[in-house]
Length: 369
Ligand SMILES: *[C@@H]1O[C@H](CO)[C@@H](O)[C@H](O)[C@H]1NC(C)=O
Ligand SMILES: *[C@@H]1O[C@H](CO)[C@@H](O)[C@H](O)[C@H]1NC(C)=O
Ligand SMILES: *[C@@H]1O[C@H](CO)[C@@H](O)[C@H](O)[C@H]1NC(C)=O
Ligand SMILES: *[C@@H]1O[C@H](CO)[C@@H](O)[C@H](O)[C@H]1NC(C)=O
Image (cartoon, rainbow, N blue to C red; front, side):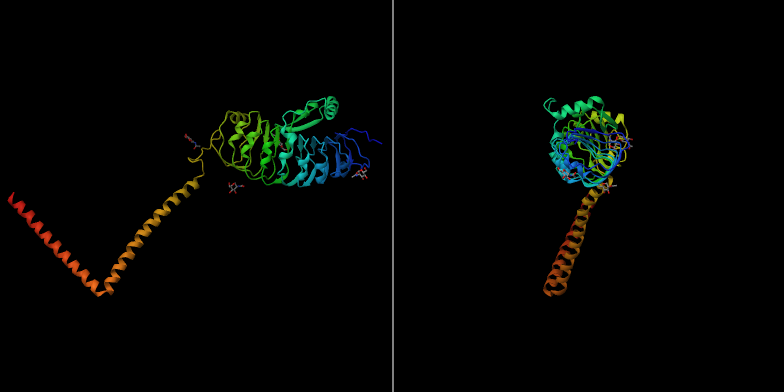
């Protein structure tokens, strides 16, 4: 009956229960159900809405895992599922969504690792989308977005609302979940991202060295994880960055110098809080001389003194062994013993004679002068 339904916007109401099943293939492009009390498993009926481009189910009570068929909704551009009760892994198939420009799974209970193949999200590598006019989705968005600013994205520590300008925003928000493992290196190829928020997870490992390649970043939040290692110097290349948060991790070493980071620190002095290993300006904690913790230096000293100890030990034991060899031969070889003592006698006599003669000479000299 509704098979020409393109926009379904029921947002900001008090609808409850599951989504009705629909046996027809719908040409739905916009499904906007945020801020309701919808519940149930992630609706399998959405499988049939293969033309969906904008889906906002945020702030509802959907639960269960994200199905792997989500990767079949290849027209998706805006996927906003934040603040539900979703759990399980992020399906790897999500990286099939080549048109996806905004992804938010914030505030769920999603666990496991972030898919390694993130770099497949090619629409997040384009700074400027294709020009409107050709694209029917742009036309629809202009229609919907003209009425009111429906698309909301959390970045720069605030909820920003967008209308048709949503096309300029590329964003990934996986904050407030239970994600583990490392930040995939591929993330650095998504150089169209304006907003990246992985905060409030249990991510470990290092911040990717090449983070500076994500040149469009304006808002970066990696706070409240278990990230370790140093802050990559390339971070200072992010000239558009206007909001940064690295607090409450396990980062160590010197904070890279740079005017950009200095300004960000002046605006918000808590961006490095809770990383006991960070040192150097703008923090008050001085770095130790080699930019390494104290106990490392002690280990170096121990390493140096070890061979010296061995040397002395070798010297001592060599001396003792040599003495024993000489002593034993003298003890058991009669001929050698005789020869040895004879030689000793001779040397003794010679030395005695030499001493007496010298003595006499010296005395003689003294008496003559
Ligand atoms: C999808 O649509 C087909 C008909 O095209 C229907 O048989 C099927 O039950 C629908 N699936 C869901 C999950 O609604
Ligand atoms: C990142 O996400 C958290 C939780 O969703 C939010 O509180 C924070 O403001 C976001 N960070 C930025 C920089 O917007
Ligand atoms: C911080 O990192 C160090 C190694 O760099 C590790 O030994 C330590 O356990 C970590 N601390 C926490 C609280 O994760
Ligand atoms: C850091 O080093 C400077 C000199 O290099 C010194 O004046 C200052 O007191 C030191 N600060 C701390 C907290 O040790």
